[in-house]
Length: 105
Image (cartoon, rainbow, N blue to C red):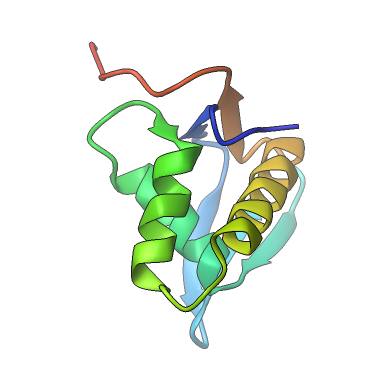
């Protein structure tokens, strides 16, 4: 299970599309698709748009809390960690122990 001290990176094993205000991910190998709620979409976009290879999960939660300040921080943390674990199970995100590192490639 991921923790706030871990970092995440996107895989290149999915395609995505916008459908009726929802982002849909498709795993072309299995034909399975996943619909993302706004929080999941926000998390994935942060990872995809990051200037680093990995993004710290804590920074994702912090950014979400800045965007949705009325939401309880602990609840956002739980939601993000659940999302990350699910996306890792589907090979759509990679979880790395420890904080993010600058992209050196």
